[in-house]
Length: 340
Image 1 (cartoon, helix red, strand yellow):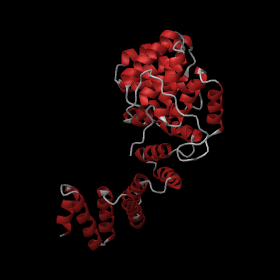
Image 2 (cartoon, helix red, strand yellow):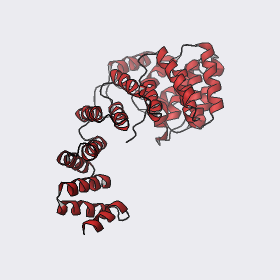
Image 3 (cartoon, helix red, strand yellow):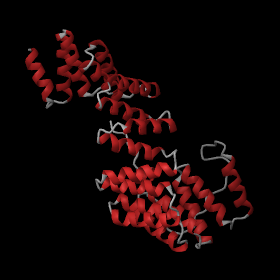
Image 4 (cartoon, helix red, strand yellow):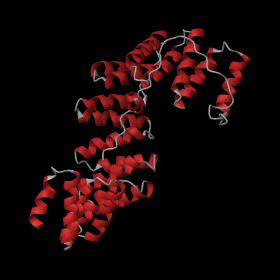
């Protein structure tokens, strides 16, 4: 399993919420309960009250649009940001919020236009520059992405996200040394930068550098219940043949996510191949199969465990299950021939 933290903004781009990025005003009705009758938050109620008192308050529309964006109520967010822009189209921050909404509705072209407008209105809007750099990275135009990052760094040389974004560009360009250097600078600027620590872990683990372990631990320190951090730490230990620490990390992961089939599978592999503890291996493979009934690799590995334990009948059943799930799964086919 490769649970990766790319860039949170871009993960949601694939969502298909087709709503207008235009500037036609569509004011949302002001209520103190949502459509299901649930009482709204104090923050939203306050914004509603401000707009009830002054329907021409563009800043209140903008703040409510940001609230809806954070709450993933994108259609309502579009209505409010369009209302804000109708009232006042001179504020850079409004276009930045419009771009955010366009990003998540998969309208990247309109997002780019909104960000360019935001920068035109405020030549020192670092957030708009970095979001535009992020967009260019997404479409793999690294030169343009780095250009906007450098623009942002000229304004604020201590901006951690700028160094993180530069690191992501270098990673995409396969320049690992520069990627690591940029990520290290990012965490120097912000020692709680979880995503940067994760990327450092990934980059160092790929080079079999033991520094990866400390980077993953730093990520866990910041987000103790992060499934991806615990998994990657366990896999890093496993790849470095530190079997006991690997099992320990996977055990910690299972305390957070008891149904993590990959942790169970990897623990089964370690018990099977390294410690020859066939019963424990079978137990973990069985848990993985309960979670994913068509997990062909888990059936196969459990079959091998049963075979080495001396239970040929159960081994046959597992190998046959592999073929039933995937008729072209050659390892199970070969094992069936051997056993028969």
